[in-house]
Length: 427
Ligand code: UD1
Image (cartoon, rainbow, N blue to C red; front, top):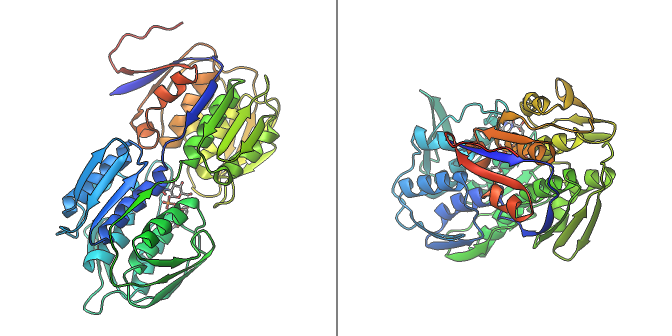
């Protein structure tokens, strides 16, 4: 077990490149299952969720090699259609294998993913979509058994009651090789959906409208080998901008897609940060004391991302004045509040609403990462706090951030990763 140790109150300053997007690379790697050939995926971040996805692809019969940030998947030897429970549980978003395996082999057997740190996370929309393609879906003994039958999957019209990111991805994955045309209404519009569609279209798929709420998929017979570069991670980019903001810092992110981080930039400007965009660069310069952010409501893209809610809460805890944060996407995504309070933050919550009374200073604390983004909120609080912070359970953070301690040290933070039993020197 490892910990992150931070000696806080160091101003961040400098330029960084942002890692490839975790939420793009996972469905894209799953999509390689549908290709009768070799896929070369560039800009794959080194994350434990990517490792877990590669393990599942290998189990299914793919030959996967990895060199730096490039992953090559040869899916010609796919021979299995199930994902063992142990592999399934390594990564919550493994439900996206449903559409990939079903589309490739005509049958998928997965274990039910169950709830996780941020809520129940039901999969009813995924299962009902597969049924609408003509598949039969049975759930027994904790397994989901999904079969396309003799006729195979047939394109259909699917209306999502909520624009679920994972369900939209599963429908695209199942639809690209289905017979006929599939139309998704109320599809998720996240940039990662467009990235998945761009990858598949390069392989010969015919997906139109990805990124809009109506997506049309004309089924094709076969997909061919291709290369693709994953988009930059808008959540990691937003996290590093917030980290700079709480330290009165100045940071430039190079090679990002500014429109993707727009929803997080607007509240940072409200807090008094000067954010400038030029081409594929975004630079943020923070004032000595941040102003409150009146109201933040998490919403599907292009609204404020739920994946940045914990980090912005850490920021509002040191703003001048009171901020209100409403979490509309996941029902229990406030576990970080208890940990932020250990730093001296003043936060109260009821249901989906949190009220954050900004304090002048946070003080270093021993805390844990409650989940992936909650963990990055601990890093942000530790960076601005006075004194030493120890963060445990950092395996959550490693699911989504590639070597955050190296990125932040490069920007001037005093942060390091230690083994659990290592002696810790504070300042
Ligand atoms: C994806 C992201 C995650 C992000 C989330 C919302 C990946 C790997 N993960 O997760 O980082 O926080 O989008 O932007 O891309 N729902 C149902 N039934 C379903 C499916 C979803 O009720 O069948 C509900 C969920 O419980 C949740 C909401 O819909 O309340 C949003 O979930 P969804 O968009 O599906 O999130 P994920 O795809 O799981």
